[in-house]
Length: 303
Image 1 (cartoon, rainbow, N blue to C red):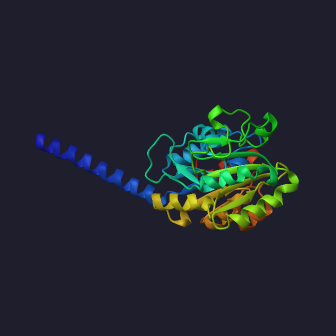
Image 2: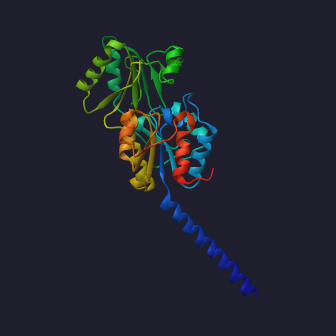
Image 3: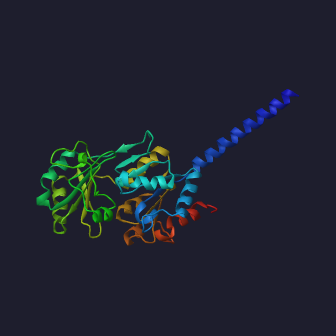
């Protein structure tokens, strides 16, 4: 009798283990890599994540999908949104220049920098190049030539902070790290001068990316670093085929992303050129939970 009971218990435990194994295999086979841009995409016009968007993204992650933010924002500025979403997946910042899992030693972590001496040289020529502000940054460091005013700090999403500690003041030769990004705010009539200087003197080493709008900001990063850099690293690490990658975006820095992934989704509020290369466009914009509504339908979520 006892042998029979033991066999039944063993059979049940064994069956449960097999079922769990098969379910896990099914999740692994069907899971997606979901790439989220922040500004103009996951965030609304007030730079907030709604409760609806937060809930749907957490539901998507709970099904075994890898949900990863890939943003042009620096790490320090992206972290509050990562926490708000409750993610435990890698966070990719600086348009693909830095990837890590906050608070963990992730084997896939990386940082793509350029030589600090380029910052020194640009600093020495800041007056002739018409530079107002310079801010060099990596995962752990931030240095700027001076604090910006509160209005500009707000308009640039704190790329150029209005408050700096004494050790964060950049001088001619005191930078002690190789940056992932150098952002410069330029006199309007010097934008072409700066981009030409960078392309002439550092061709193949760094690339300038000009912000849209009237802020006159140029971001300088290592050559060939894009959001696709981060996507490729994530896909390789998690063994996810390109056909199982879905990405959302709205701006120029999302163009290559949506073109590269298996299913690129442009926001309703996105640029025409971005929509043109996307596989689909959200029915709703970023002020009406466009990403969440799309994911709910795409993944067949019940909420």
